[in-house]
Image (tube, rainbow, N blue to C red; front, side, top):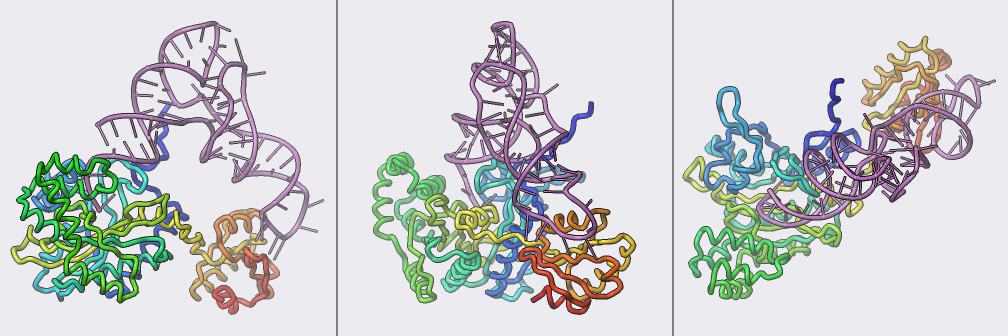
Length: 415
RNA sequence: GUGGCUGUAGCUCAGCGGUAGAGCUCCCGGUUGUGGUCCGGGCGGUCGCAGGUUCAAAUCCUGUCAGCCACCCCA
């Protein structure tokens, strides 16, 4: 009579069963470790923000705010939004404590962010995104550091320099050309979008002419001539000196958001079956303008876990699952149950993760269960062991057994 | 928001007008306190849902819902 509930997770979000959680942890831990190795400190915040943070002008792209956020009214009649990105939150946090913070500031976070849109490969409604930013540095050294970090991150995931390429560009270049050709604000946005998709657009010039008329040809001409800037050249050579050679200047890289003010970059997968932008970032010096009048120079990037997972998958770099449990204790006789618990307590105090059988099953079944859970070691305990104090420690992958006393177990497993 | 593809057992899928299938998983067995392999047996489906065509529909048609992919847009 009663309709049963669906076991599907909510549209566009994922369940993380232990195997997936393992990969998820690996991704997050790798991100954190690399960021910290460059001196970045972790921060965090609630997933809930007042909606004004995103609806204010300049905070983000308008469509995202109006149609692509999870927004609701709380019981106190406040408009609340599940954060669609982390940047406005950092801006808020920075502006609040600006005077007390020690600049330059290096911060990172791996928050989950939400976007109400139609799910597809590489894009879900919820994902975790590494946000890495350096605040308070005007010089191009900040870009060099951020891109070095991004590159180091790719290598930490097991990628080689052939697996990905970094393309850099400079918004300032575009801006100066826009000014010369007196391109208006609305036109700018459209042109940026066109440039972003240039490689994919067949009749790029026609589309460009529709927006700019006669200025289209001139814009294209200037773009191809002024395809670099001193800042870009300097950045490129710095990165090369640091051994990063899979970098190139590409003026078609503009990034979607308006808030970038200078150098932008994007990292691409070179594999033909996954040939697309993995992540990117750039300089945005007007970040805190919503809260503050004094500009704050910032350079950063965002990297999503879904794209990383796809990348790892296509390049065969996913880590193999292993249980966090080290040892499974099988019971060979039910009157030694408390003795087994005692052994478990002792081993846990030595730092081992120990799981104890609770069911009345045959030893063979118990071992099968432990193996299915990918627990590396098992030990059967019955009357003999309780009396002698020596155990047979079995390594499931190899099938090898070793006679050990209680005090030798931890070292046998850790080695 | 637009377009394409797909919904059959817990999972992956075959069947494409004539009584619902395979592999994997799961459960039981191949006697004693040692798993993976092998062998035998078993559980399990209103063929997404609702209409229609037909003597007969998982199969053909229409609608609907869901999922995937692409576009739009972009973290």
